[in-house]
Length: 158
Image (cartoon, rainbow, N blue to C red; front, side):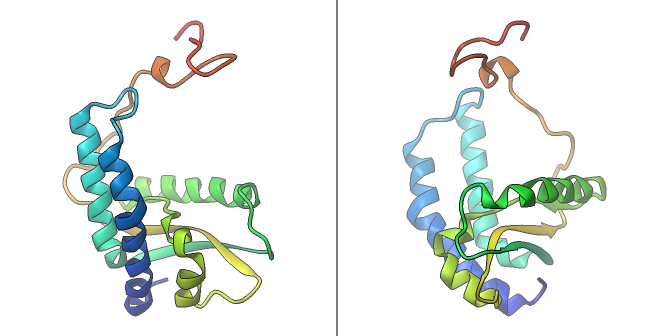
């Protein structure tokens, strides 16, 4: 999708969901394990920036499936394909992220995008040109997020 007017209509709902759900959750939650408070605040700021400029991404890939009743597992074939597109974009020096927040207002955003009855969107991949430093991604220690036989139970060897 490239039409700026359509993207602006969707962005209104994307921002509304941030203002009502995502922003307050960031403000009320501590940083997750393995992320410093400063890093968490930068993540929140980046999320808010994306929210305010979502419609400015030159291209959106909107992943849809045919079916009357979307479920959490219905899109399982979509997400690996989207991940491959993310990797391809990164390899080309483009910035992209998988977003699903528009689904908070699914009927309104799908209508704005002209998605026909019987089809549902599962994700939007805004693709554009990154700002600032765009290098390797850092990760926290695996021991903070990888467990064996139960949440919080250490995985041997990590």
